[in-house]
Length: 111
Image (cartoon, rainbow, N blue to C red; front, side, top):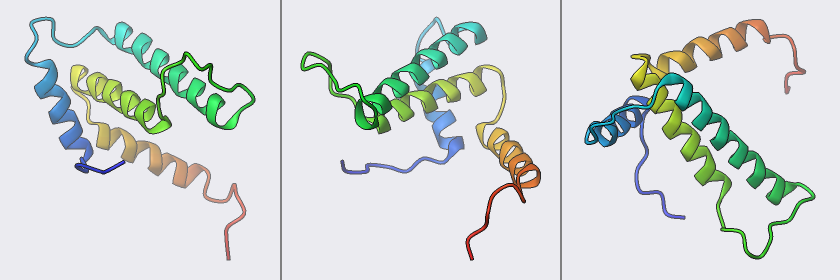
């Protein structure tokens, strides 16, 4: 698949906001977004299971890719950060800092 564009997290949030802002309904509530995120993660799990697991796709099932499902998850996460006035990049920075600190000696390092 040809890569059209690479987005920074700020650009993803902006693109999502541009899309959502054109509709009167605006962003879903945080609870609805959480339900949507759970649904998308379930769809990713299904694709992983079809690709790497023991459950092949039925011939009648739509072809979707793991990358597509991850993209859907990123879209919902950008909706969530935008609607809650948070920053996706900052959320990741906080998480990776915590992981690098907490887990720095957890795994065997490559030589």
